[in-house]
Amino acid sequence: MSKPDPLLLSNLVEKALSLGASYAEARFHSLRTLQILMINGAILGAGESLAEGVAVRVLVDGGLGFAATTSLSHDDLEKAVQRAVASARSAAPYMKRPIGMGPGRLGRARYSVEPLKPFQDVSIDVKVSDILDIYKSLELEKNGFRVGNVTISYVDSVEEKIIVNSDGAYVESTVPRLMVFYNMAATAGDRKANRWNQIGGSGGYELLDKLDVRGSMEDDVKSLYINLVKAKEPPRGKLDVVLGPEVVGLAVHESAGHPSEADRILGREAAQAGMSFRTTYREEFIGSEHVTVIDDPTIPGSYGFYLYDDEGVAAGPRVIYERGRIAGMLHNRETAAVYGVESNAAARAKDYASEPIVRMANTYLAPGDYSFEELVEDVREGVYIKKYMEWNIDDVRWGQRYVGLEAYIIKSGELAEPVRNAALEVTTKEFYSSIDAVGKDLQFFAGTCGKGEPSQGVPVWFGGPHIRMRGVTLR
Image 1 (cartoon, one colour):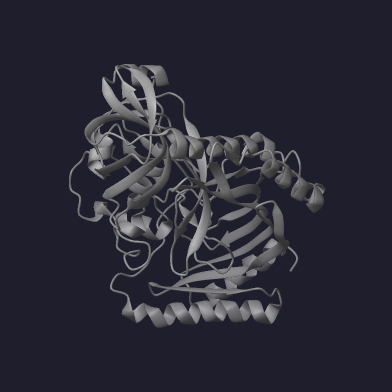
Image 2 (cartoon, one colour; image 1 turned 90 degrees about the vertical axis):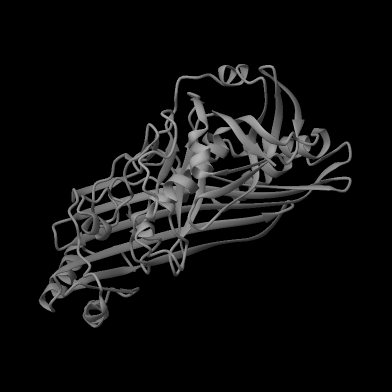
């Protein structure tokens, strides 16, 4: 399939309106991907894939219909429109609450991320060689410590979209992305530990160096060594805790971002990705005055980057928690209509065959004024958790647990000996209410956020600075 003429998409919208739709949108969506898989220094496979097609979404009498096709033939595209309209019309009588499209700052724009090294200009042989060089640089065995299994998955992609709707939106975009996922399993005697990580951003092949994939993997090997060889049992009970940006970022993604998705609050995700404590939570505040959480798709170079969402709405920073107060939600136009507000451009679809639903992009705890040394120096007895090894959170995003991979005792304002598997267990309110100081060293981490049925994994960043928490529970 070649990139279609935008007029073709406009004609699909007009066709849907002529068949009785009150709203219609057509989206060309192409995602071209190259993946290389390496295990223990051996290349298991490399290949390209292309997910490309046209999606049509319509409203008829308050019912929503969706259809997609991989064909650009006139007949197939018209059949997709007819299927979408028929689906919406058949759903309409069963709607307890008719679906509508709320207002939003709809755009007419073209934008793209311009890579310094386009992926197509770098041969697959060079990419394979670079991945193997990173693997060979790792010190995988010493002093009875051994990393026995290393998996590296390299993925580069180029995502292209053309979005047209009956309310006047027209947006063309091209965003290339690079992602490296790795998993390492290590042993030392009868002790075992595992570390997985994902690194990604928008741009070209220059990101392999810019994001320092080699340095991240080398540092994670050191963290595994510290955990298995050097670390002692952690203290338990109520303690002061300093958390590293990686743990902070994960926590705000899970306990601020997800429960603030308006469709989840309304219950749409209940049988799929879970629910939200905000459905029943009636208090104004969730944390201390030091807590502000923002989701911003427009951060340059970010893994979750976009300037307009998949409904053609202009994106910008979205404040979720502000100085401890519960502030906004993440909205697409459907949920904006329910709440009587304007969409804040949170509609994203994984690919052409997926419906745009409410999603995060780049979610982070806003930085403060403290240096790391200042955060630590005021702790008489506590623990610093630098990285996590495992985590979990309940379906309403309230009870949560983070287990440290690399962590250290804090004694009288100084870092002391390392401890293994320090487990922080808190509720969402306890987490944010216990924060009394926030660092200025904002850092971001890549992830693939899952949601929806069928499941849609989309690229995101999550992040934050170091924070200090008073009197939280370690188990």
